[in-house]
Length: 153
Image (cartoon, rainbow, N blue to C red; front, side, top):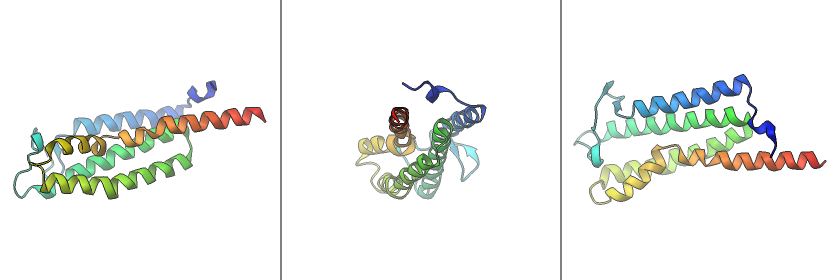
């Protein structure tokens, strides 16, 4: 295993630390209502969206999705310093933003009572940065394979 994959510059450590701080920020502010600029603990507990509040739900969930994926991109950049990996991450982010997020929001707003268990699963995939973070081991193995091929030449 190439040892240089685990040697990070100060710049890389900065981006990685910024990503972790950002994820912490998103976690701490998950109960923050950005449309009202106040904390509203449990405002969407167990899938309950008050009447007339669907747009607030959509705005808050969309911002959370966007920031989680943005900090995931920073993390990937900090680890690998490879713009091609960021481009792939942007494609994954666009998939989530333009396909998964609208599906999740539509189901959560229109069918929240009848499919609550499905929404719980979809919420975890959409709102947490798991899809993006699955790219990290893939990029690691790509980088490791590239390093092995370069060392054979």
